[in-house]
Length: 110
Image (cartoon, rainbow, N blue to C red; front, side):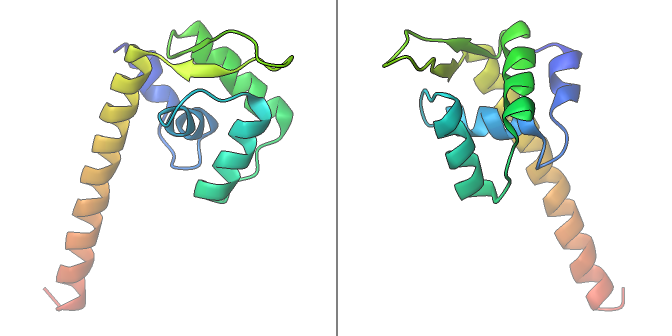
């Protein structure tokens, strides 16, 4: 994984992270991505934000287009994209675990 790819995905509401998360469950076209992200993350992306993120992820080799279906162009996550998503979500989980542990200590007055 290159550092640029990893730095692209830092916030839980970051469009590239949301796209990779959505595509981890299978290929989707733009509208399906928008709906899935809204459903699982409660985030509404504008078409400009969506397609900007698609372009960046495609340039980085983290997603790729698949054959057109009824005039729609679906995308799928690549092996590198899965690896980046795995690394970023593992890092986020570690950070969340540390935050929760420290909050528990603070609640006990430690």
